[in-house]
Image (tube, rainbow, N blue to C red; front, side, top):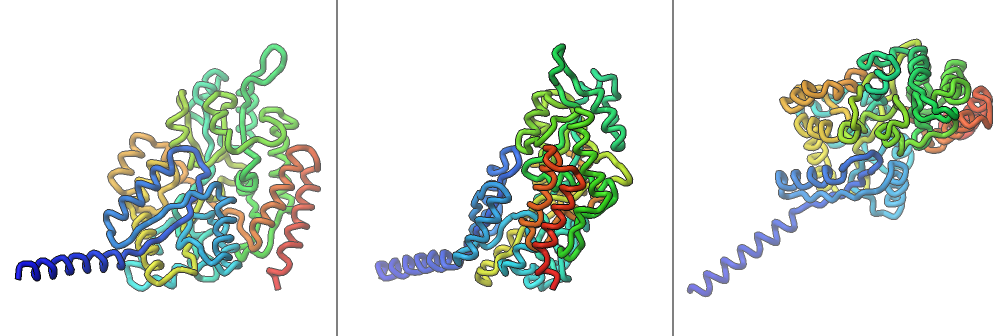
Length: 427
């Protein structure tokens, strides 16, 4: 009898284990590594914490390179029939993913009042690149704006108030002139300013166009305005910083090395993502400031960064698992932790009311600058055929910055190319 009882017990345990294993749902997601800092460790830790709290779901992060590499890999995986269940891709990839029939709107999974409240919990500025046609296609996660960082010691040495950043374009140029240092031979030892023009030139440029009170595209993503006079004015201001005023390196400035140049005191002011905030705080060996971008006709910055997308070729169980994971990782507590650990903007207002975030901001007020700038933010450049349309602008900007074309001609050519690409989207 004992042997029989033991056999039954073993069978029950084995069956339960098998049943438990069968009920485990695995989801994978592509995650782009494009900003400095130990981000992969943070993502691994978040996935492990979620699995502990949600035993029936296994999360597999796949580190997929830059944002550009990640969208290519994601679309290749879609075409091969084995896409990830979710991915963090640029918010501006929304139209491309819709056009490729790769993703589902999150609205399809929203069933409860709690779900609906969650979908409405994000900062409105971040939803500008997350919704179209009355549907929500992206969930804000690692979102940002462009901010100005400055070296306070360099400001002091130049006779500037170390606690007051430039308020407008005129002041930024004046400050940059005072901050640019040359040796006895006339060689620059410290540039006044650095606005990167590789990697994401269109995004940094949108800071200038927003401040000059002009948009680069319509909401439907079918029309660009690259050759508007106010756009050309913004290009010329950027070009003149390097070629005419010589307060910034002429030509192309690398996105990836800009923070390192700041740490090494090769320049005194830089424009870059707030996603570099923790990186700067960790590596700058001097007091630094963080401010909203300077105004021209108005203040402003485009939003930037990545959203979670829900891929079509996944089972209903996987879709529900993705929803649980994304709701969990964007909860107030987790959004606050992510913002503190990385420097990205915590994507929902209630995350800023958590005790952890309140304590962080009290000790490091710079963390709230990007959040406060959201009231002046605009949607990041995003259209149908987005990669090609954006490349047309990037090519035009680089032609102007290198002196290959005048600002007006570069933007006229970029607009003509964008019109050609978008023609089919307007039918």
